[in-house]
Length: 455
Image (cartoon, rainbow, N blue to C red):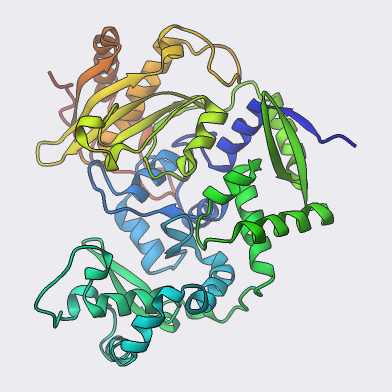
């Protein structure tokens, strides 16, 4: 029996849907939707870079539009809808998934043998740090002194207490209670997540199956390499992942599929065959526009982005300045399910300016051609630029900026048109994103601000 066959656009459209990008900025943010999004993607990545805003804020804005940060903080730190752990990298993950991650915590000491020497030498220190948290309540790294006189560069240059805090967290003896100025404050896990802790953790045998099926559900359809690069923590050995996949194929929970135009070996959950078929029939893969964080789960495996959307993307934060092509904080431009370009973006908060340092459009879009992965006809350029402008205006309001400066575009001929459309979008104000009853209200009070484009 031959494998079910789908067009490549079916996989790209279903991926957009599973990443909640079928309606960018089109949902309400609340406890249920926040938990649902984190469950669907497997995690919302955190990052220290704050050039535009923190990565998790940008990821949530691209799905829900502007919202009040204090409301999100309440959902995380008081209602405990999410908690911090590693899934792809450091992430906010759904508390409903705690039994799975509890298994990882329980196995942490056995898995990570690099800790053996530190644990042997610093057993007393770990006990002291844990006891200090038990006695004094939530504590941060800064609450512990560094007894050393000299420090070395690199991760192991952390003071001993910092390593103890990290080990206590990753092994599940503590949890992140809150953040102050983005610095983690830890408390005993039984005080942070008492209800979640009472639930039975997954068995050691069940976790690899959960890990693979959760990744497949988040992507819709995936290759073995996709499964390796999506939820990258814990690092499951390739042989174990292959055996898990074979088991799921034997039981029929997972099926092998074929995608037209791609010779790779693709897999999907059996329950996703009909959603793939529905995605193939969809006239347009998505409706709306957003600028995406470089750390968005949609971009976690960038080779997948190239295969499904014809979009080559590199996070150039880690590239030396003279070698960058598109800029330090290049945000992909998603319009109606297609990646039409990217904008190197920076928020100058003191001046109230969101700077688009360079906006680089894809050649097919500039030439008026159909997207690399068809999901309808060619995009209408004026409408697409208006969508980009409206999304940029929304982002500006969200990060507290009243003006947008567009420095350069590639090609240069689109700069004037983009500036005009941005000016028009800003002038319309925030009316379409005013709070609705029952929602986490967007940034009220920002309409009527000076919204002129920059020079």
